[in-house]
Image 1 (tube, rainbow over the protein chains, first blue to last red):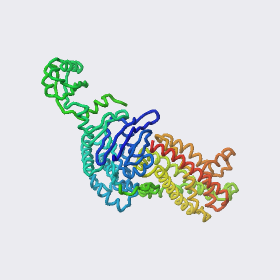
Image 2: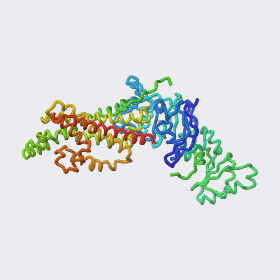
Image 3: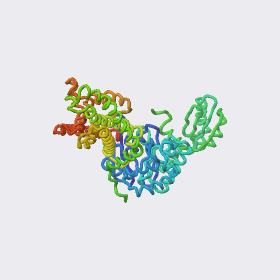
Length: 315
Length: 264
């Protein structure tokens, strides 16, 4: 049985539909991601899974229970890392863990060794008695993760776990989450970072405007929604002119004869992207088109993401 | 799922507030102590000597010295001020700046635990400060009845009659813009016109009747009767009932506005 399952899950705020009838299942032990641009409905979905926001439509089951009726019981099995840190800055690092553990009615005798263990795990043992306020962003994030683990939850919910952190701090957080995954902790996370999704998620859904637009493992998504390679051609001149030349190249009889050269052409301000399964062959033909430089790279989740959700900003 | 389900309770939320109180109880007690000392010295002794000389321990003050008249009134007024402080910025902070309530809401605690936990703590703070106030009153020699030990509890009820509707209102606010207006033009007039500094019978009849509606007037009447031992009668039950009714109404409305804000 799935740990979390949703059918037609919907959340409306007045006239605005934040989550528009989505279906998904999360299995025990997997890391499941919601990937999407800001405003896609990820956080609203997370709040419903966290049982702090009632669905306005569809059905949701967490650990086999209905959040509308057994929210308290479900929440006692969840560990939540919210998007905005809500640590108590006036209390010490250890006190933050203690007081949160008390919300779960855990006795002091259980909490004391567990706090020491968790601080060790997130590498904050030396700061145990310091105030939270002066800690760096990365340390606060790790402390929030430790706090979420204080009740030994069955599911860890992480809403944009590394947003706002510097690269070193992000890697430390990822490494910790990876360790948790190896220990079998089920994790549900939202992110708009492709590398984060690729690194952490076993399976993910791409959300856009409240809907799920794709679902699968990072590898499956790349195979399904992008080509094997991407050829990036840069130019000093006008991109539109070069794109036109590249399109003609693809339509030339000799190119047609060698099967399709590329699937899609995309124009960016300083370059043109060619989505292809035969990058090297395509490059060999490029001499006919005036360009500045060319680069062949593997397709990434970012290509999938931008293809599915578009490049334009949705505010 | 071998672990037993957590039974959430208000007690667990109160623990949080007590832990934060442990961090700054010294400063808080000192403030609770200094404030009545200053007020009673300046107004009770300073202004009081003038009043007593002019009016005598007159009929208008119910046969009391001005200090004895003023002190229990200030006890109730002080409780109101403290309760309003505790139910404005800390409540908005719980939703917005510190997000304490949001952290609690993600745990097994329910909305009512979060709300009642904070209210319980506020009542504790106001009761404690009121006992310190009573101690200062005793030191000034303005406690003349053993019933006075009940006065801090009545002061706390008076405070909570303000704190609960104030918190209910604050839960609907996006920012603190209106807080100083509220303190200056709603709370301050009550402090000045509700029988703390002079009997409301001195006011024009319209203002006097308005004063009867304010919770603080009822609190003042209770504290004054208990600390002086005069006028202890069934009227006091009416004052108590009025304050309790306001607290219940405030809590009921607050549970609506808190639930909406926490789980929107």
